[in-house]
Image (cartoon, rainbow, N blue to C red; front, side, top):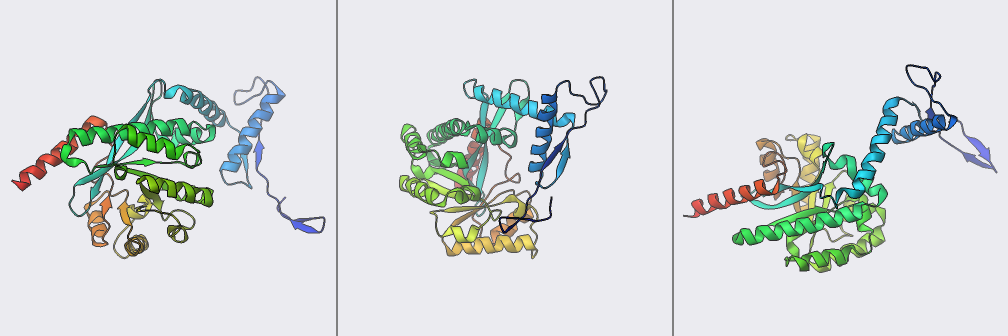
Length: 336
């Protein structure tokens, strides 16, 4: 199949993703199918696994594949009702000034508390939400809940009105025609300064439809919200896209930070990103900071902000309340 052939004078190359099913009869102790359509169904499952694994390969069906498909279908069904059943929660991970150590804001991170399966991380259910279109309604809930929470904090801690909240936007959300109006309504509903809301997008969003993205980002910029480019350095054309979009913050992907040591390749990449950002008057947040050494290196590179387990894991709302209050108390004691 890998050998080229000629079609109407043109040389053509094709590849194949193959799914294989081996059935040993109804009474087999390993695997069996009772009907031909079951064989076709399972061969199709194996073929799609081959595509996911990189195409141009084969996969032999096993019962684990079937169980994964069944679980995914059940999750999709449960996801339809999760919002109305109030099964989603937001956790809040602090974003810290590397210069002062103070909390400047939080990133809102969604989790699903499933009634039977317990905690389900976004890596499992967000792709399903994207494929089914449920991401739009889930994203609407996240935006409203995040704006509600930052409004609470600004009321509760009146001298911390500059606290910000960061919310992730997916490709499907960005393509939704009512996105800008929805964000404007949330800002108005909770009486928020637009600069308190940071919207994080990945390079995959930028690559999806550059013309549409440019228009939407300009509209969001006109609202006054802050636009952040997430996972910077892991995508396709980071440098060539920076000048086209009104981005104010770059978030350095954790993969660079976690393997960074002075002078190595990752250090040089982080150094290049911070230097580039400084030349464009763009702030930088480093993700995945876990050691004091990483914090010190990033500070020397004049990275303004950090996020990671060195400072705090994602927190429930009440725990975040306590953390803000503790930091305020320390600040007040220092100023006395």
